[in-house]
Structures are given as C-alpha cells and as structure tokens.
Image 1 (cartoon, rainbow, N blue to C red):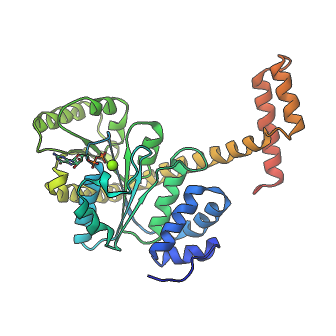
Image 2 (cartoon, rainbow, N blue to C red; image 1 turned 135 degrees about the horizontal axis):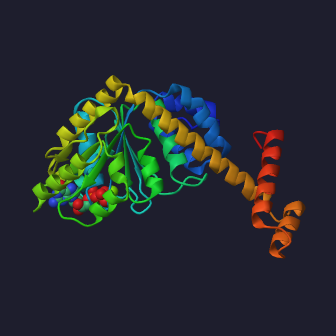
Image 3 (tube, protein in one colour; image 1 turned 90 degrees about the vertical axis):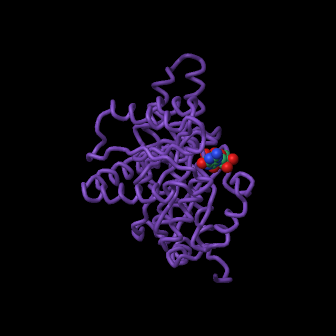
Length: 332
Ligand SMILES: Nc1nc2c(ncn2[C@@H]2O[C@H](COP(=O)(O)OP(=O)(O)O)[C@@H](O)[C@H]2O)c(=O)[nH]1
Ligand SMILES: [Mg+2]
C-alpha cells in the first residue's frame, strides 16, 4: 500500500481509486457520504470506468443474520479468488466494531485481507435519503475493480428498498418462526427478492418457514424475465449452505444477462438514481432560497402567514423562480 499523501483533487483521487488503492477508496467513500460538488466531481471521473462488479444486496429484519451471511459469502468468494467489497447501509447497526459481527476471529481474518474492503455507511447522504450515497459507493467500488459488492441493509423502509434496487441480485433473509419476517414480506420486500434465504436453519421450524415461503411464492406472478426466486436454507454461523447461496447468486446474474433482463435493471437503477439526485439538488436549492436574507421570499412567506396568499401559489412561485435561477447558473 502506498504511503503517499492522498490527493485533494477529484481527478487524482479517482486515478488512485481505479488503481485499487485501499486508502484512496476509503477517502473517496468519505467524500461521497459528505456529498456536494467534491463528491460530484469524483463520481464524474469514476462513472465511465465502472467495471462489471456483481452487486448483491442482502436485506432482512434486524438479527436475521445478514452480517454473518455477508461474511460467509465474502470468505467463500475470496476462496474462489474474487475481490470483495462489503457496504453495510444500516443506520441502526454500524458494521464497524467487531462486537456486532458475532464471530470476532473470523472477522479478523477478513479485516487482514486486502481483498475484502469493509465499510459501514451509517449516516444518510447529504442529498437526503440513503440512495444517493449508496449508489455512489457502488459506482466507486465498481470503478475500483472489486469483483463482488455485498450491500447489506435492514429491509424496513422505502429508503432501504431503494438501496436494494441498486443490486443486480437481491437476497431476502428470513429465519424460522414468524413475526417480523412476515411483516416485512407484506411490506413489499418480497417483490424485490431474487433469492430467498432462510437462515438459522439449525433452529426449530425451518422446514415450515421454507414451505410457507414457497407456498407464498407459488401464488405470486412469475418474476420478470422468467426467473423463479428459489428458497434456500443456510446456517451462516457454520458456513452451511452459504456456498450454495453464492452459486445461486451467480446463476441469477447469468440468467439476467442471458434473458436480457440486465438491460432493464440497469435502466431502472439509472432512472432511480437520476430522480433521487435531481430531487436532492432541487431540495438543496430550495433550502438556500428560503433563507431569511432573501427579501422576496420573506415577503411571500409573510403573505402566506397572513392569509393573503395560498401556500400552493407561493410554493409554485418559489419553484418557478428556482428553476429560472438554476438556468442562469447551472452549477451554482
Ligand atoms: N443459530 C444461528 N444463529 C445465527 C445464524 N446466523 C447468524 N446467527 C446469529 O444471529 C445473531 C444476529 O446476526 P447478525 O449477522 O448480526 O444479524 P443482522 O442484524 O441481520 O446483521 C448473531 O448472534 C449471530 O451469531 C445461524 O445460522 N444460526
Ligand atoms: Mg448486520
């Protein structure tokens, strides 16, 4: 690893990231989390150089064993000679600090392997929502040449579902026994699952959970592109069934490519990213133009407060003014 100082200029940092330098990757991710023009410049430089990383999303209720499975998948991928990046987008449980990861000894193994880059993104992106920062992180890691990007998030809110949509292959974890899982499945997570994993299959009731998931899936419509989401069982703590999960993820990616569905997915990801970025940029501009030093805006707010103007009319006027101002100086 190079001991040289890291550059403060996006183009130079981008070159070091593309060379796969771990410190540069870490710095780049920090920039992306902070957002703003520096992050924009970095991603501008990296975007054309993204490689064909397989992005696998892993979601499920807290405690289902996502982090444990991610570690097992990373070890398996390393044994197969592939480089790995792990991004945990989980506001409730940062990935850092071995305690959260259960088996410390195995974690240490991963931590000392330069072929596994681990990063927790516990904060929300500056542009609002998890998606912009997570999307940028995936682009960066892909440009850094990582073969496999494992994206872990708690599958509860719409934000987290959006993050999962950045993945080519999405794993949804359940555990034996019902409760949170069924809640989650009802909340629409089932729609994004390419592979269902019933983890903790060493526990009582795994067969029942697998059977009820299969029954639920057989009632649904056939997935886009003719892929039938399989239901796999594993015991992540003992590496049982985890190699098969990685195999299945590979099979899913091959299916996406062969069926042409990959093109549609890439488009869907691109659309979601452009939309969330535009919303974030607009929100930022609006925030600035509602500042107290803006006399025109202050007068308009006064009129709404006194009932002389409706909030809708005022909001539309603000939008119109903002887009005029943006047109004058596109990178303000
Ligand atoms: N019995 C059993 N426990 C597991 C298994 N996988 C994970 N766990 C345990 O479940 C707990 C939560 O795991 P973790 O990976 O942190 O879950 P996450 O919150 O979904 O990331 C930890 O104590 C793990 O050791 C498994 O296959 N069987
Ligand atoms: Mg976790």
